[in-house]
Image 1: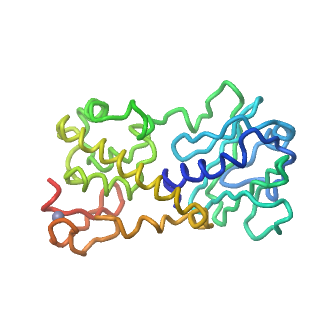
Image 2: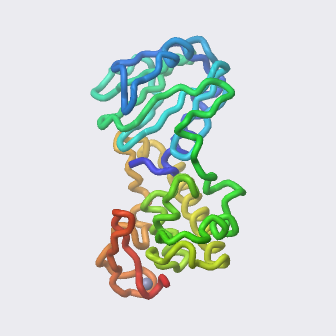
Length: 270
Ligand SMILES: [Zn+2]
């Protein structure tokens, strides 16, 4: 599943091809993805100039004067910029033709992705309840400390709550907690300000590293499954249940938290 770093790398990869271009036409090969594609996409986008391409959580927004196309890659979506003559293949659901002669093509075999419309000056309901961006300046240890007081949920579940902070999926939560030395099942409300400071730094460092790595292998990573293969050999705990801790050599444990598999080291994480 594309995580925040893959979405951000996609944004950076697409920007030079899209910014300032006009939409020449819209082709919808089906009426819906996860949800129906609203009529505004085909009615309002043609002729409009793409003024910006932004990311909020794992959503991409293509801004035009009347509003923004709101895209989510879901489980299996990918976006490519291709010559307009490129033959359509299976699961190519949407094309935005550009005045450059290229086409932005959205492929999504499992159709958990979406293409929605946000009128200019409004915020789509899907974006209204989201917490701050993890790489933004309003996300830090003090913020996590304040938000966590009185919370009995595990710190891992807390960190993956999109109302607390967006885009910290299972991989990045597990790796950040290991880096910060915090046991994933520890109650969020009982972790000190100082330890939250280390955790916020770990989240930022790990996401930033993944984005920069993704940026060097963009061609691979906008592969249809969006798998972040470049990151696998660098994982300390995620997916390594039963293997040796890369720090201390002890066997990594396997806990289920919030119904998600969670590998961690009982020696390095307290
Ligand atoms: Zn260890």
